[in-house]
Image (cartoon, rainbow, N blue to C red; front, side):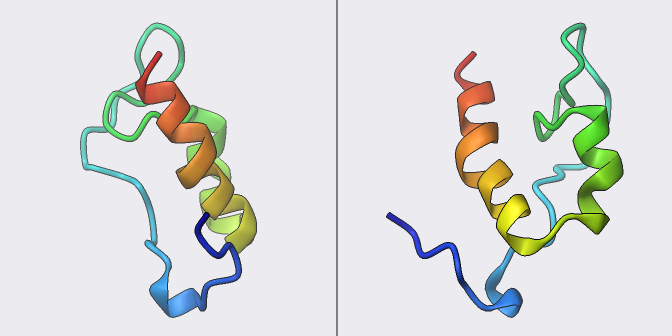
Length: 63
């Protein structure tokens, strides 16, 4: 299991792929974040970003 307490310089800044369009379920077709997650991304702490990128988004890609 990855260490969630990684130094900030090792964290990816965003899962954005540059394909920014929401599908009919409200997920971005590029990164699978919701509009709310995209809007709050900069205000999120490192732990919340890592949780979304490592746990939430992979589950959405398989849906």
